[in-house]
Amino acid sequence: MPGRTVYLETFGCQMNELDSELVAGRLRELGYAFSQDPAAADVVLYNTCSVREAAEQKVWSRLGDLKQRKHDEPNLVVGVLGCMAERDGAALMDRMPVVDLMVGPAELDKLPALLDNAVRTRESLNADAPERISAKLTALQGSASRRSATLAAAEDTLELLDLSRSVSPVDAPAPGTGRTSAYVRITRGCNKFCTYCVVPFTRGAEIHRPPEHIIDECKRLAGAGVIEVTLLGQTVNHYRYEHGAAVSLGGVLQPQKGRTYNGSHHRDAFAGERVTTFAGLLDRIHEEVPAIRRLRFVTSYPRDFGNDVLEVMRDRERICRYLHVPAQTGSDRMLKMMNRGYTVAEYDEFLDRARSYLDEPEKGRPLMVSGDVIVGFPTETDADFDATVALVERSRYKNCFIFKYSPRPGTVAYDKIPDDVPDEVKRRRNNELLAVQARVSGAISAEQVGRTFEVYVEGLSKKSRKSAGATSGAIRRAGSVMLTVAGREPGVAVAEAEPAELEGTVQLSGRTDGDNIVFFDADASEAERLVGTIVPVRVTAAHHLSLHGVRL
Ligand code: SAH
Ligand code: SF4
Ligand code: F3S
Image (cartoon, rainbow, N blue to C red; front, side, top):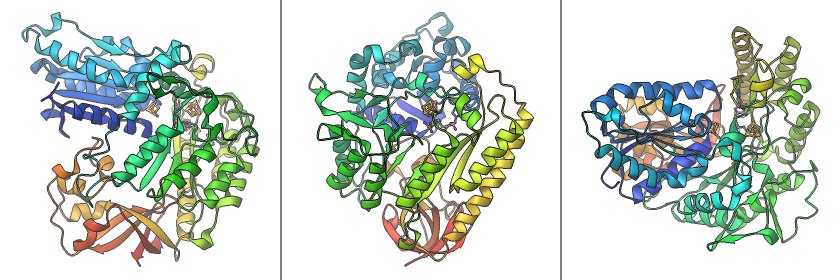
């Protein structure tokens, strides 16, 4: 409802960050204001993640904190969006009566209507007896339905949410102050059903957006000043769109269901003009939207990653030499139990192949790889764990996210395999692996010393923000990515922030095209101009997760 103020906090993966941005854009167009302070908001929304129990616990605790406030301010509207809403369904409302509305990730297009309804309902309550009135609103897919049965009907409106993305003026309020980095979704959902994972249930079946929509979105973002685009999908390299089978509904081209893959490394035999493969999509974006100076994608699945993609990455200079390609474990027995569909040897082969195409340190373009690992999956022995340690050592990840296995209700592992690795063992393995990865990261960083990289400048480093005594306004003023670091409100109008008073020399931070973090000094007077641009930096020193250098 116009005039209301919303606080929106995002948990979980980049998909959720993008969803929050799209939702915030829609609500802003409808006249809602946004605040970074929950206490100042009439509407508190959490866009949630279910991937591990710890992620859900954060939200439970936020909701618990709202109990008293809801009692004092009965008009407050509380909404749970995203994967937790979808997974927990009505049980969440029973457990947490403060929640007025829940919207799953596949139904976010319905949020404006539900929110409007919720605000009106709360305001028509008798404030003395709010508990008498129950007006709970939900828009959930229901895990059981997955999306296949009602694909067209569900997608029609969801695709419109992506299509309605507002890229201006919020994203580019003025030259030099706008956001210059953005996510673009190419695939929704997941068909993999790894036995530990909730995502196929919360996000539904895998579907691919029409290339025309993706390219058009990239063009619009580029037009608004964006120079770095990260394409999103759970198994992003599985992207495939068959034009012959394209369906239009109400004049809108529809996304297509994902297919199964044959695991071939070779060019897709059927990929002619009628099919846009992932390689083809990358190529088209690179060629048709040259203003995007950095094109990257996450998350890659270690299987079905064709040489055609590696060739495009090698031959197109604005595609980043970066892959996030989780192995999950170094034990074949565990991979099988996880239903990952590849062997350790196949994983190793993929990394070798990727490096043989893309690792060109002498040209300032080493291939950087990051990974994910789960420790303590049921029945994991010391020998399985040792195999994971060995994999992490030889994979030479720039960085690796290490997770303790968390049993998720509804998954095959939860139902069929008891969570029998004690937490203490999980913790020990987690710490051991962190130490191994820290050594690997340190060695990789050290190799970068003396090299010169093109660095995409994201903003003031934390150190500079502190020493400048920067307010949150100043942080936001400093640049795009600070939006995600500092505030959790996506796409907030940067122009609302007070200009920062900076003097002398400041430290800026940015990233190489391989996603290495780089710090370098700049004069305060030029700092603002540099944010959001790409500058050459020679690396002079290394720490295990960051590089330090001088601007050339
Ligand atoms: N689609 C991506 C992963 C998305 S989930 C892929 O397959 O690579 C992000 C990461 O969370 C996973 O890579 C996995 O390492 C971790 N994860 C997922 N479910 C988990 C669980 N139940 N317990 C612990 N970690 C989990
Ligand atoms: Fe989850 Fe596996 Fe799909 Fe990744 S590929 S989202 S881990 S089911
Ligand atoms: Fe979490 Fe859902 Fe992403 S479970 S990791 S927010 S897809």
